[in-house]
Amino acid sequence: MKRVFFLFLLVLMVLMSFSCKRNRTSEEEPVVEINTDSVFLSLDHEAVAKREKQADRFFTQLWKSGLNGVVLYAEQGQIVYEKAMGWKQVQRQRDSLHIDDAFQLSSDSKMFTAEAIMLLHAQGRLDYDDDICQYIPEFPYKGVTIRHLLNHRSGLPRYDSMADEFWPDRKKPFSNEALIKMLVERKPEPYGAPDATYFYNNINYALLASVVERVTGEHFEDFMKQNIFDPLGMSHSYIYSMRNMESVPFYMECDVPGHELYRSGAVKLQDDYLNGVMGDKIMFSTVDDIYKYSLALDCHLLLPDTLQQEAFRPGSPEWKHEENYGFGWRMSREHPDFLFHYGWWKGYRSVIIKNTVKNRLLVVLTNTTYNLPSEPMWEFVSDTSRQLPAVSFNPDVVRRNLLK
Image (cartoon, rainbow, N blue to C red):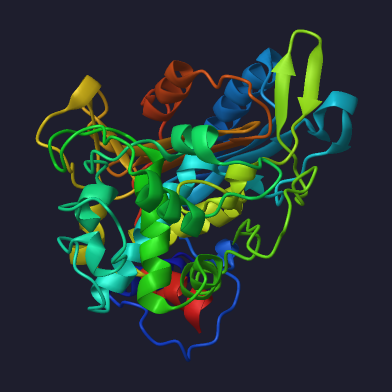
């Protein structure tokens, strides 16, 4: 029996020796959903159970303090803990949440928009240092490049403030094309000169979504589905679109509505005219789909490692407030081994924290304005008192499950 077990381990070690460098480029490859049960080698079950118990204590405490949502924690590539806590209809405490419920990612959508731009760059269809006037000729500001947008160094004004002042009918959706048209007509004063400083601004990623559309001739939501969501088996992910709507719906058509929290209780939020703008927000996804995406990045299934790594490099020479920004990912000097992003928009909060050294992923998706306490979450994901032993997962198995 021991001899058989030793031979089994030897075979696994040989399989692990293969690198994960294949880039998905063929559109003809059929897609299947990832079978996460078969992706990873067996970990120390006792260590996993202890870490799971620790996670349950932590998230149960958050739930008691007001968290309403779905959480996932993965370590060494394996899901250690995931749980749905609370309600879809918070004000009535009705319809329990489930693991596969899709939440609006708010600003966490930006990492996916950045990936779309990187895919086009890899295909030779654009360059990061191209002036965006090359793709949006009517754009009224000169010297703004795609890289400036990705790194939040464009100096452009906020579009939400502009829309609040100049959009005449709040019952009509405000779109990416309407945003560009308003910039042309009004040309509001920019925040600063291009590449002068880091200034986080949603307009950058809204314009990147427009660049995707101008380059490809496809709707942004369709490009994302065909080039990222479907290839990675992210079957519950989508971009919310009001493209064909004449008026803003009273409520957003989604399974998990957002809620504003007041002292008197929770109130389901109505749809908003700014939800017509894509790229900076308005993507819906689940914790499992985000886990699949993180796994795909680790295994370089969308882009080769040399290209993917550019997303994780600080884009500014200065570290404003000790933070920096890559392509859709935040970085912190206090936590140098981490990539992360926070999301907030119209009744939703989200957190994605990824430790690239200890191979950890934390995803928290909520449908209320409950202020997720960042410090305890960082302490949890950084805690080394209990950690799983390092283990190599088999990238070939990941690739087969996603792309065969």
